[in-house]
Image (cartoon, rainbow, N blue to C red):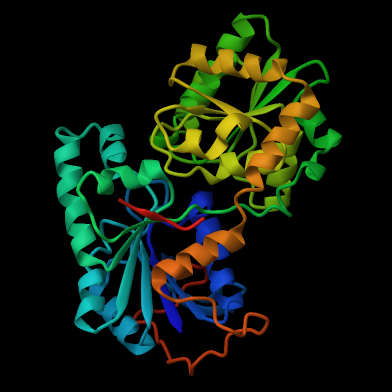
Length: 400
């Protein structure tokens, strides 16, 4: 069957979402289905990739968001969806694309909304008043518009569960256990950032308010004050980059920027002593899971979904620099081989094949019998851009 996926807010800095879209698309293709992804970008593009067909529609950037774009041309998108004739649609945006649920219902197409974030949590980060009431109202509308709501953790499912949503399904995401592996540890990578007698701490995420990168910097400040020779590497970019540099001016903080090469990211994570993930509204936290897969323990905010993901392979604490620093020191008291083995063992519970199976179950689209052969796509409709093409791209059931 043809599964058409739509996503907004996809940039080079949205590593978790990009990874999820890529791995699910590849999994759908391998399972004998045809995957089509529609995303916004600078110019029109229609290409066949390892994750299936990817169509990029021209979209203007949203001011002061770090380059985010949305599929704003509803008439153009409806025309494209009608031409694609999907059997299923899968939507990764609960705000600007919620209307596609009604489009699908009118045409007899089954629909799925993937909840990648806690709406109430994000509203809290943005300082919105009466956030719970607003989130409940919007979440109820979302649940009514789509046949299935997928959440990736119990934390993410909670705001739908409290509404008694009957079409809620919980499906954990996965991690690439081959790319992210303890064998990626590299002494030359480590020496690039820290001396042999220093503690290498890594923050690998988008530099936005929701991720709280400032807490990573403050954690290293506390560690240094406690006479722990800690060094922080910040792997990522975003709107908080400049303010973060000012905050870290007198501290041993190295800014690596956005690292596009996944193997290079894996080498950094595997070479670190500990990774910190201070975001309080993380609903899964792929970067933390990637760290565990590399054999590196993680300190996370206890308010997020990450405690249920990392288990005893890390430590969950309140969102203060003192608590994070203390947790880092506690992890370093564990024997090195023990903490690395625990981290890897935890990550091995989360393979992408299991995530793909769970998503297909949620779609009511079991893997096709011909799993060992590629999907045979139906004839591709010709999609023509409306503008001149640019040069660039653009209670819950748990399936384990």
